[in-house]
Amino acid sequence: MGWDVEACEPIFRIENSLREHEMNTINSLKFAHSSENIFVCGTRDGTVRLFDKRSATKPCFYFTAHKQKLNSADFNIDNTCLLTCARDSLIRLWDLRKLTVSTKFERHRARG
Image (cartoon, rainbow, N blue to C red):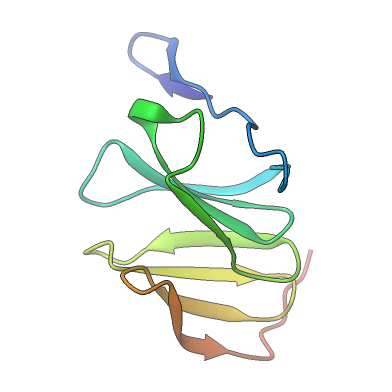
């Protein structure tokens, strides 16, 4: 659920409307740098979902970024890339224009 902190009231709610790929615990949530409406979330199953809060009942798109729990996801400054890291010991830099991995860092050790 997204909150307006000044008005102290909810402004949008993410609902789990995906039957084939259940959304579970959200581990990371970040707004895009140039938009107050677009945000990304990463989940325990390694999935990345991109939402528009004006229609947050379902994601604009989603993809499996990692085989294990996603720890963090964040946009670059112009929102063309997304950096993700997970418990599978990988850090990936995704090109969002193509939905491909442009750089992969292996043997990263996640703790905790």
